[in-house]
Length: 175
Image (cartoon, rainbow, N blue to C red; front, side, top):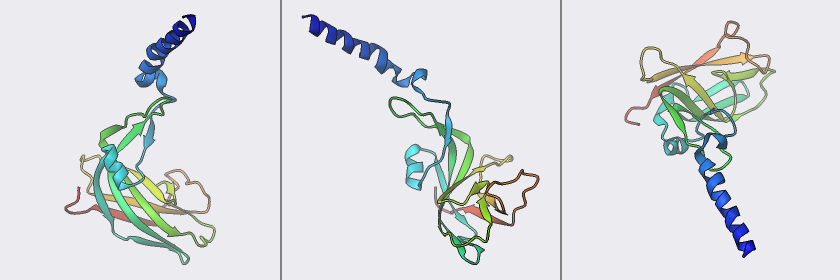
């Protein structure tokens, strides 16, 4: 009788203390961190997808041996999430700010000692670029600067000089 009473008390403890904490503030592991989707389907599942965009040039040649192809590009709402200890954290999206996401395929080749950045991100398979449009909530055309540096870190904004730009335009009929 005493053993079953002890088990009942332990179960009640878990029901009263642990499970109500799943959505509580104590369940988080830190402040919200910004997120970006890894694919168009993931963006749609999270409810942040806006529309697909097309680059003015889908193949970029930085050096004679470095060719990069933009495979997919889309615009989604900026969003964040917290890391939960128990369960899955909800996505919190911002309806008035956007980010451009692009997936790349590239041949690394020899960069002749240069480091390349699209926006402020170094070359990688997935690049995201925060879009800012001070005049409207709609972003149909997005210009992204490309930088070439001798160091793996971008200098301050005053010292940067873009050597090229990619322009992304909203695809007609897509949403």
